[in-house]
Amino acid sequence: MLIVGIRGDRGCLVWADWDTMLVPADGVNTEPIDYFTWDGHHHPQEAGAEAPVETMHRVVGEFVVTGQRPTCIQWAEDRS
Image (cartoon, rainbow, N blue to C red; front, side, top):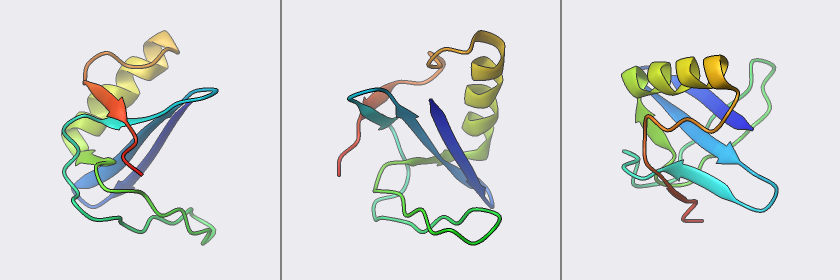
C-alpha cells in the first residue's frame, strides 16, 4: 500500500508491505516530522520519509496507473 501526505512543497511517501516499510532512498527530512489526517489524527513520519512535491506527483501517478510499488524512485527500508 502506498501512504502519502502533502505538506506545502513536500510530502511523505511510505510503501507498506506485509513485513516491510519503505521510504524514499533520498528522503529530504533529517528529523521526524508531524503529519495529520484531514480530521486531525496524528501520523508522525520518521526521518527520510519526505520528498519534494514534484516527486510525490510522479510516484502517485505511477501507482494510480499500475497499482504496484512505484519504480520511478529508489526505495530504502524505513530507518526507524
